[in-house]
Length: 136
Image (cartoon, rainbow, N blue to C red; front, top):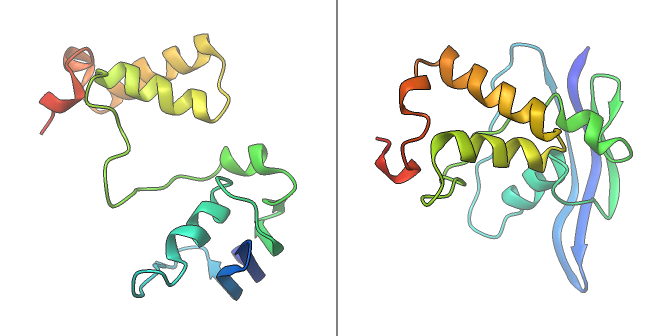
């Protein structure tokens, strides 16, 4: 059974076709990546998979979650590691974690609790208030 199932995914920006008829599936335990030249639609596809962009057409299923029509529920199950930092240098580690959690709709008390929990889990609780630019 597929963990992620993408069928006939398309994305248009006006007259520009950014993604055309992409289909694939990923099973549990499989390692999967996107390779291709600039402009091939990799970032746009990832944005659709993570709910940051809506497909023009096609379907995305994460287990039994319809990612297109139930984006928030799907986002609770998705994680992504970008190739560039998407954190803010002027914020500290704790603030960056809280900011990211807010993007996923977490309530303030819950995101602060979770940020403290993650800092402790990774042994960073003593440096959580250090500016992000000071992290290695």
